[in-house]
Length: 84
Image (cartoon, rainbow, N blue to C red; front, side):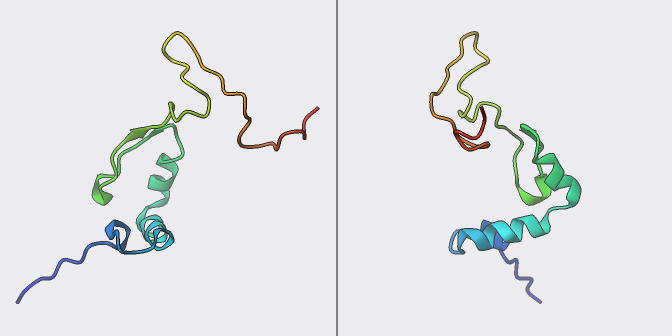
């Protein structure tokens, strides 16, 4: 008897991105989903997801090297002009 190992949908580059994302999220436990909400996101070895620190994702500039950058364009919430 031959065992066929199927590649998980979330790892299949031939699948549309929304399908891959939905499959990955469906396989994650609640604890794993919560662990991804932190800037120091934990690894999920059983799904092949490495640990990741996205503190330096760029929206706030580079702030941990002694000098900081500031970007003049607001992004995110609240929309520009809604606060006074």
